[in-house]
Image (cartoon, rainbow, N blue to C red; front, side):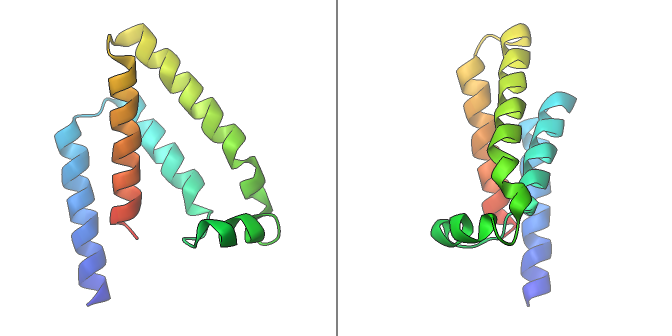
Length: 103
């Protein structure tokens, strides 16, 4: 049953990604964010904060990497698109949907 649910969520995620028509830069950003978040346990935020420095010391640096990713994504959007806030917001929402869908 769990395998079926997981496979179903993967298919739904693939459909969402296809429908959004991301370009290669946006797709790379989503992949980077998801890879960074994979090192973080899927636990309550308070537990994550407590355990992050002990079990996953590399997570202390995640914010710095995420800031660099989003800063460069914003520059990319400003150079290539008119609606920077809309594009950035949509990508963040999609990233969160993917993360929740794969839990």
